[in-house]
Image 1 (cartoon, helix red, strand yellow):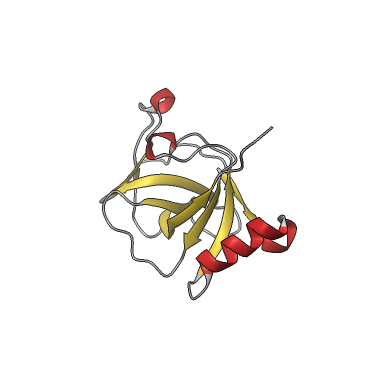
Image 2 (spheres, rainbow, N blue to C red; image 1 turned 45 degrees about the vertical axis):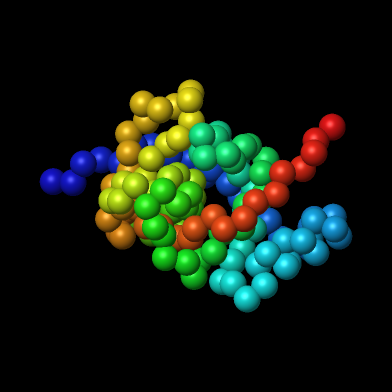
Length: 130
């Protein structure tokens, strides 16, 4: 039988450009232009080792083919309704956590059924903060 999947939660949320400040929206529009891309806000520190922090806005390009060591967004759990969106580093055929606090998490095997890569992170933006 198939190994059970580790329990995961959504690790980000989609963001509409219209809901962002005008200067940020304009910049991200230029990054997404001509791409099959969308903006997500990270809610995980599991890709911190790749330079992405909780709260970062990332551009996920669904048109890119993932290559080894790309940071990707994947759906885990099968059908699109209950699937969870996760962010990991792609080391074929696995998705790995790259965070000092969570290095012992099990890798996810990309099987294109229960774990499906949705897109590649091709850009990001971090707000300066308070």
